[in-house]
Image (cartoon, rainbow, N blue to C red; front, side, top):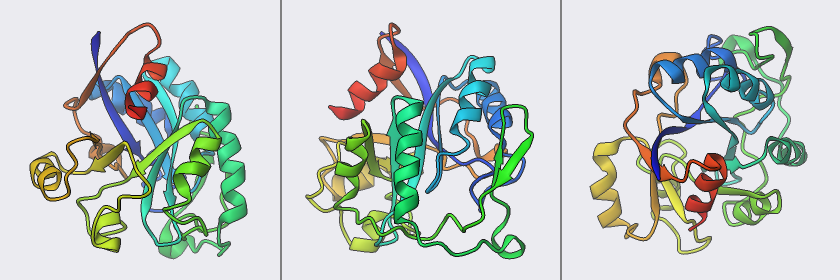
Length: 237
């Protein structure tokens, strides 16, 4: 077993609220500088920059995970992670059927850039990505599982789009095996108050600019034989 330092919640230049400098290539490079081993790209309601991130991560020796920060119909953010890139892209295609299509106002919300692994802009997402989908938080786990993925509530210790701030508590159903906390100092309070003793506590940056990515601090102990598979097996427990 070996320690693998992670950040499982990072946004690229595809997310309207993220800096244009957050290209997949720059994210992989910054992750390397920060000493991270496993990094998930989780843009709002899209996986379209994940292929470029996988290519860039390989160059930097980072283990990439394809993901998405799904906005449910209740306006709750849920982290969705996929062991295989192909499955993530199939999930991305499915999510497009559930989005509310409102044209993005770049002058208000920012750009939504789809790029390659060399930072070249391929295209732009026309419709604003941060709008809620029609998928409820109750429906999300089963849908993600259909594509071989796992999901869990994002930043439960934040007021904005956190499941606890929206619903007032962490509901018994659906039963998530993990939750994400944004700030490490909040772990003890939230574990005790919401009885999270049997859940994996994921601490991730939710980085929207390169300097948001934190130096290595949070880790999983995994078998080095197949690290990404080992991560998913751990999160499912």
